[in-house]
Structures are given as C-alpha cells and as structure tokens.
Amino acid sequence: MQRTSLWVEMGVIYLALGMSAVAADKRLLLLAQGPDGHPRLTHEYQAGVRVISRCLEDHPGLQLRVVSADGAWPQGPDLIRQADGIVLFLAEGAKWIQREPRRLQALTQLAQNKGGLVVLHWGMGTRPANYIDQFLQLFGACHGGQDRKYKVVQTRARVALPGHQIMSGIDDFDVTDEFYYRLKRVRSASPPIPQLTVEIDGRREMVAWSWQRSDGGRSFGFSGLHFHENWKLVEYRRLVAQAVLWTLQMAIPANGLSVNIAPAELLLERP
Image 1: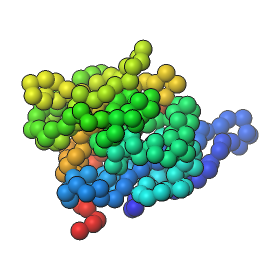
Image 2: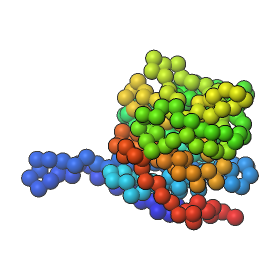
Image 3: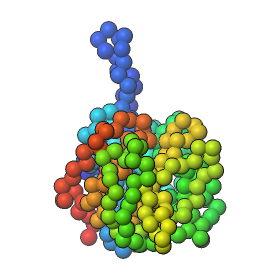
Image 4: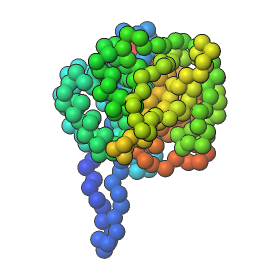
C-alpha cells in the first residue's frame, strides 16, 4: 500500500520541564481484502482504503496503517488491540469478525476502550443470520440474513441531520449506487442516528448512520460504495473521512474537511 505510514508506539511526550504533555496520535487501522468475486470496479476494497488513507494522511494527530486482512490473518487481533479506531471495508464483515474468536475479542476490547468503529458496504454484511446480533452490538446496524435488501438506484442522497459534524460541508447530491437498506438495527436506549437517506421504491431509507455507543465510543456505517467510481464524488470522500474523525472524537472543520484527490489516485492497481 502506498502513502501510508506504520504507527510507532509514542507514549506521552513531555516538554522541556516535564510539566506538560502532548497527547499521543490516534492510530487508525484500515482493513481491506482482495477481490471477492464481484465484477471489476465493484467491491474494490483495497483501492477504496487507499482513497481514505490519501484523504487523511496529512491530518494532524492521526497515524494510519493500511493492512490486507485476507486469509487467516494471525497478526490481526494484536493490530486491532493496538488501534484507537478501525475501518472495515471487506467481504461479509459481520461473519468475518466472528468466525475467528480472537478477532471478535479484540474488536470488543477496542469498543470497550471507546475506540472508533467504521464499516463500509459489504463490511456490514453476513448471509447467515446468526452473525447479526453480535455485530449490532459493535456497529449499530447490519445488512444480514436471507431477507437482507439491496438495490442499484439512481437517486438523490439527502442529508438527514445537517447540523451533525459528520455532514459538515455536505449538501444533498445525486448518485448512482447499490445501497443496502432496511438494515437490522441494535435495540438501544440511544439508537443509531440516520445521517444520509435515499429513496428506494418510494420510501426514504437510511444508508448512513452514526451511533454514540453506551460504552462511550462511536460507530459509523455507510451501505453505499458498491461502485469504485463513486469515490470521485467529493461528498463520498468527505462523508467517510469525516466519519472516521468523528468516531475518533477528533475535530472536524465547520466547512468540511479538504479531501482533494488527483484522478490518478482513483486508478486500480490490479488489471
């Protein structure tokens, strides 16, 4: 992966007299996988996390690590435990988390430590329904079970909560994407809050949400990003980048984060 840096265990840095301290950088782990059988230009997980990394690489107080999570991934649980936040962009993520007990344990520990959790598209998915409930406790919503719904639509995405930090600098916009909708949601006194909605079959559906968890941490999910081309939309890049910062409890500019990216940055590395 290009343009990423490995985090260093920094601890607390003391100034000249040792009386003041600077907080350590937040460590963000971006997890992706290789092709999952979908057509090229869809479910481009590795290329997608490179875009996220590019948008955030110069952000102060943030260290990034992009990792391929294919195969058994034995080093994964340790990497998750070392992180302050995680982005999950891979295939059938709810199942992927739970089929390895140490992986689930590490993510649960991250959540208990008020870590930030971000999930994108099929990363929130599972075909078998038995993986839904545990995933809901971490991320707040899930695209799971045999009754899960998804559809490619050309629509106008609407900002559901304009005053929220995640939506800073984002207005309603037109998009064509495959969205997951009618997601399963966690039962909570403080449930997930819709951030972005689209109309599907005459009904407005939540496709992005934020969730202030009871453990003090934050989660975010976005069910779009089926098509890699949609990273060209400044609204998509800003939505995801600002959601990452929000889950890490970092400041977001009132007018929105600068997420400029050259067209070449969107090109795929694989043929």
